[in-house]
Length: 576
Image (cartoon, rainbow, N blue to C red; front, side, top):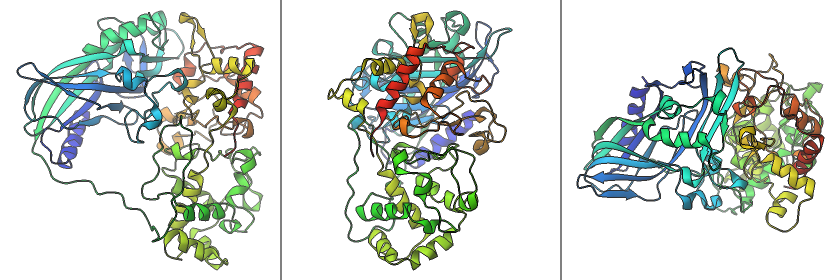
């Protein structure tokens, strides 16, 4: 079934292509010992007899080339692919392939050395190597993770543990060569299988319990060496498909309600940040940002005119609420802590459970929520139309004075996108403008160091979920809080058991201003947060693998190291 679905996708892609002969579409199907891989399923067994589940399988490919029948290799320079099982990214296109008959395909797992060490801030938002898209960059440590395999495992008569294999660093870039008869006088497609069973078992069998449950590919690491040795046999060509070229093209995105006269907004961000995927149908303009800012503080959005967005997202508290739970109309309290509204331009879903796919959708939901503003969008539009000066603002922002829920969402979206935070004490230190104190430096070292005792690394392992210049990975994780049956987190949206207890990773920027912490506000101080990860993680079946691989009794950091982590976290404070 997966095989058929992938080729259906390829056929659709080919029929929607540019019409240029010599375009090669490639799909990669993930398998385990020849069978389609099911994520989050504790059903697979490696050669060591360990039962395992896979929660993450993500990789970067580069260095594509195809071999003519005369043995000449044609290089496809500067083309990259990011594949991710959980994100269902399984296909990519190689463009500009010269017409001809070919007999083989090769590529590398991992970007070339130049790309691996290049400036990430210059990459387009949709570029496969943009870290905000793939979450495979080690940021301050430099370089990409070429291949990430994470999950849970159980040895005989043992509790459930986590594993995290991250293949990285230039010497471990691995070339894959495959026989592939390709007729590229027309567009063509190839289906490849990536067999995780082969990766873990042959020719060098791996054992999580005996060899180690984590690798970050340090020099001389036998786990990384085994992964490199096994990669070549993990890929197989399953099928080749030829298709006639097509002529259809995707339609360009058109801006919504752009007025005849407008002032482009100057979006500001750090030079170290990856480029965000700003909405192309809602380009930032001064007039619309100003309207959104006014609406953010307008109490007309609530039923009894007692609340605005700013009531629960206070600027002095990094646009969050210093209360454990926000209070809505009629004194009703919510069930989750208010999230900070900073650096939203880089997010791809919203709310703790990710139920809103866009920011413009998210901003309207609290208005209609009975425990928050408890108002209808129709009544809000009418109330705003009755406010003096409001219709002219909509006229300036949208070209017409008509006030609608859609326009309210677009204006609020624009204002929130401008709330960027990036010039903290830490950032200034990274630019060499100031020097961090010794305890702050120690905290940063702990933050960015994995817990991998077999290689002598005993850090705090924070960077897996809070890495990169944004200090978040845009994913959903079970971070070891005691389960609450009334709030299963991401599960309430997807209904997948593997998502039970998972919540969105918040940014750690301005973390000193956003207390209390966690989705339920259960920790009042940063010291309590650090103690949780040091000794208080609750182990369950969906606990993030990067936490599940730690000892059952926790990391048990020293008092000095816990204080150093808090000191470092406080260096991330800056004004929007």
